[in-house]
Amino acid sequence: MDPFRPLDFLSLDDQFSEEERMVRDTVRSWVSERFLPLVMKHWEAGTFPMELTGELAELGVFGPTIPETYGGAGLNSVAYGLICQELERGDSGLRSFVSVQGSLVMYPIYAYGSEEQKKEWLPKLAQGEAIGCFGLTEPDFGSNPGGMLSTARADGNGWVLNGRKMWITNGTISDVAIVWARAKDGVRGFVVPTNLKGFSAPEQKHKWSLRASITSELVLEDVRVGPEALLPKAEGLAGPLGCLTQARYGIAWGAVGAAMACLDEAIRYAKERIVFDKPLAGFQIPQKKFADVATDITLGQLIALRVGRMKDAGALEHQHVSMAKRNNVAIALNAARVLRDVLGANGITLEYQTGRHMCNLESVYTYEGTHDIHTLAIAQHLTGIAAFR
Image (tube, rainbow, N blue to C red; front, side):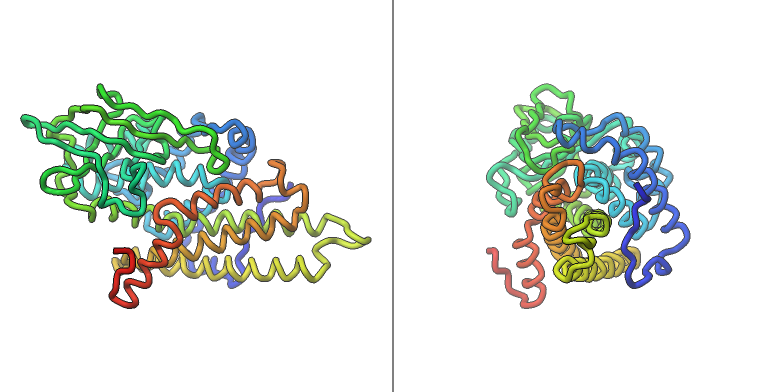
């Protein structure tokens, strides 16, 4: 098969630095050569290719914006966005694995942790020697994390944690969990090794989305941690929500990658598929679909690039990320649905990737802030009135 041909309708390539392009192209080649040949097998089996963890670490995609002092690559936010774009071009589960490791585990340790926590965990996580997960969502509290029931009770000089978390990416395979629980003084974050007594992470099975990704519950039954487990700089919901802003930023780029993969595949197919003695691509209806999707992707690329530059300039706020995540996932999901139709019956087989992306994006549309919740977050900024309280 010919190499992947990315859409760059407005020649945005020249808006990236040489380093940003180099990072993108390195990850793009790895995804094509190492990940795509394996993903169909793993998606069908409902497993994640853990054998690639070491290679991902060598690529430097775990916490790439973390300073080199702590094992990161010290890259800027746009380079990280391009990494997410290329990873999700492979599969949303791959980008989720990396996103959780960097934005939801390494970031809170770096931003809210003690120097001892940073030195102990960040190099291990960057090198893939430890895998992490993020425990915020609960069975009855997704869009309303402030209602969480998990508790952290002070006991001597340590803490006792109790509660259940749900829909946790990497949970079953993790060595450490960032757990958010309600203490007397509000919501606090903890760095919790998963081998402690009372901690378990049963895997959630029977998914038809994000199948090449490990999803679990977290169950904490009188889990005792020492004082060193507390993230000292994280107080209240601002802590976990700050982490989610980091992750949602990466999702905005990742969704564009998934849409690009679908468009490339559908155009290739339509140019080769002969219908009524000419290529399917030569008919007006498929051409309109391609034009619409290409326009949506281009707008998504522009939003992602702008929020990336704002992030690097320190000007990015959560409502900007809400717009980027909301728009880009919606256009990607629509692209996958429309282009799956172009593939006809072939589109439902795993020999083609568009249907896999379509199923995955149903989860991405929902997690880390549903489409509707991001709608309300944007509107709250516009009106000054919160509609979800």
